[in-house]
Image 1 (cartoon, rainbow, N blue to C red):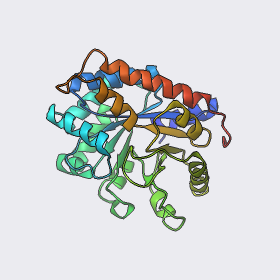
Image 2: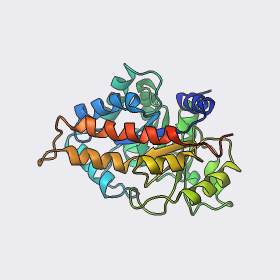
Image 3: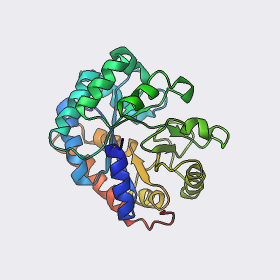
Length: 279
């Protein structure tokens, strides 16, 4: 079964360019503003959208995304509202892939079978659950794949050739390569090291490889896009969103535009890349 994610990467391969994958925390700084941002992302240049599922203990996330999750939770964001937001987005966009990213606890609390059923009805295409290793595939990965939802796994600089096949087993949609060791938004990726890592992963899989963690500028996005199949940007978008808020942490008339302006700039960078590793 091909998914929206499969179709989008196949279409971009035909175009000869990488995907811009944007991450936004669902419900940050409030539901309505978050929905407005997500609706505006495709026109601004996002090819795939990752939506963070707010969680109280986001251990792999840096300060920016942690704060975004806390803002969303304080504004009343729940898993039910996250799926509602996807449904509302889908009412006007049936093509852009949506990936929910976060931690297993909120899904476990919701109930795996109910979550998958509701996610499919809402229009979710894939899941990234950072704290479920391959050894726990029976918990969510295998049920998700059976239901037709892509399960996207993270590979890191410390994922060696011995471990990589285990990580790639049951992975679908794309592989998310974490370009730096550590938390999100902590440092800038080294394009040369990323290129070598992408080439190594591609020796083990035919899946597209998207690279994230640390990409903040159009120039960095362009450099990564020359070798990777996708460039993921999250913390930089969260930072411009936060900077647009008023002193009380509420949205202003500038909030949506602040995010979409950066997305448009990043999209230009991705589209300017000269593909040196296009297959």
